[in-house]
Amino acid sequence: MESYCQYHPLEPSEWYCKNCQVHFCEHCVAMPPGSYNAQCPVCHQNLGHSGSTAKVPPFWQCLSDFFAYPISRDPIVLIAICTLLPAIFNQGFLALIILIVLVCAQTKYMYLVIEQSARGDLKPPTLKEAFMGGGLMLVIQQTLIFIIFGGLVFAANMWLGSGIAMLLLILILIGLPASIMLLATEHEITQALDPSRILGVVGAIGWPYFVMCGYLILLMLGLGAVQEFVVTRFNPSLAYTITGFTSSYFMLVIFCMMGYVLYQYQPRLGGAIHSSQHEVHKPDLAQKNEKQSLIEIDIALKDGRYDLAIESLTNLFSRKPYDKVTLDRLFKLLMLTGRWDVLDKKSLPVLKLLVETGRIREIRQMLRGLYSKREKFEVRDPEAAYHIAQSLYHAGDYRLLLRVLQGYGQRFKDAPHQAEVIMLSARALANGLHNGPKAKQYLMYLAKNFSQDDLAAQVPELLEHLKKDGRLPDPKVSFG
Image 1 (spheres, rainbow, N blue to C red):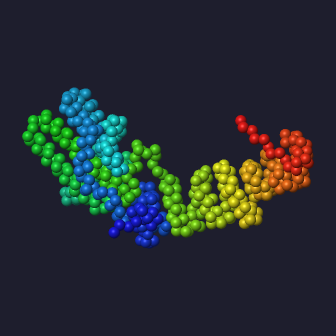
Image 2 (spheres, rainbow, N blue to C red):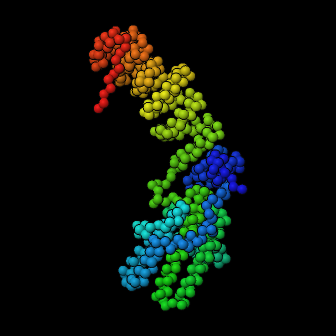
Image 3 (spheres, rainbow, N blue to C red):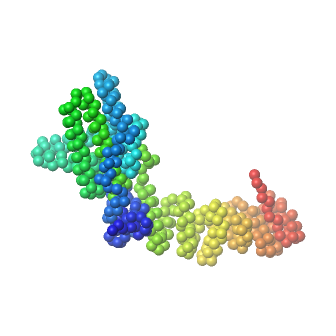
C-alpha cells in the first residue's frame, strides 16, 4: 500500500523516519550537498527511503523508449555524420582532424544524453550542442579513467595474482556505469574515480543498479553479435560503416538508460544533475541550509510548534536581513501568537516594511499592541517615526500619531524633520483632537526655536486660521 506525506497529503511518500514514525515527500527534505543521506526535518536523524519512486515508471518498462531514442532527428543526423565522414575522408592529416572532432562531438553528445534524461527529459539534445566545445576534455577524462582502471587491474595481476586481478576487474566493470554517471553529472574526474562516490551511487540505487548492469551487458553482447555478423558477411569498407552506425546507436541507448536510472532514483541520490551547463551555479551549503530552514519552519507551523517556527524565522532573517518575504512571515506569525517581546526587538525593520508597502492598518495594530504590552516601547528611528506619523495623520489616528512622536526632539536631537514633526503634531491636535490651545503652543514653540526654518514663516498665518476656523489647513499636495 502506497504511503503519503504527512505534511503534503496528496504527495506520495519518498522518505520515512523511524524515530518520528512520519512519512515525508520530496518537498519536505533538503539533501546535504554531496550526500546521499537525507535527514529528518524534525529530529535530524537519517531517513530511510520509502520506495515511492514507483510513481516514475521503472527503466525496465521504458526499453522501447530507449531503443527509439537514437532514431530522433538530431541523434540520427549525428550518427550519420560520425559514420559517413570518416568513410569519405579516410586518409591524410585532414582525416585525422575530422576523426578527432567527431569523436569529441559524439562523446560530448553521449554525456549530454545522460544529463538530459537524468532530468526525466527523453527529448534528445540538439545537434548544435554536440559541437559547442567541451568534448575533448570529456574524451581525455574518460580515457584517463580507463587507463587508471586498467592500470589497477594490471598491477593487481603483477603483484597479487590473476585471481585478485579478475575479482578487481569484475568490481571495476560493475562500478563503471556509476563512474560514467558521476562524470556526466559532476564533470570532475576525481568524483568519477572516488570509490566512496561510486559505492554511494550503487548503494543508493540498490538492486535495480545490478538489473541495469544486466541490461547493459545484454546490449553490449547484442552489439558484439551485430558487429560480428556484419564483419563476416560484408566487404570491409561497408562493414566499417555499418559497425560505426550500430556502435553509435547502441551507445546512445545505453547512455539514455543510465541517465533515466538517475532520474528514477534521484530522491535516493539527492538530485541527479549538478551540471554548470544547465544551471547558473551549484547550490552551495548556505542555499541548502536556507532550504532546510524553510522546510523546518513549514513543518513546525503545521505541527503547531510556533516557538520553534519563530526562532527559525528570526535566525533566517538574521542571516538575510534584506529578505522581505521572511520578515513579513515573521511579523504575521508574531502578531498571531502575541509574541510582543520578539516583535519589539524586530519592530524597526517590520515598521519600515509596512510603511514601504502602505499597510497602515497593520501598522496601527502593531503599534497599539506594542504600546499596551511593552511599557518602554518606542519607535527608535527618526525617519521611520516621521513617516509613520504622516501615515497615521492621513489615516485619522491622531492619538497614536502623538504617541509615536512623543519626545521626538529629546530622543533625536540632531535628526531632520524637527520642524515638520512639530507642525504635524499641531495639525493633529487642532484638526483631529480639536485642542486649539495646545496646537497654538506647538506653533509658538516652532516659531521661537526654529525661526530659520521655512515653516516658521507660516506660523502667523496659521495662527490666524486657528483663531478663525478652530483648525489648521492641511498641507498642499504637490505633484512633480
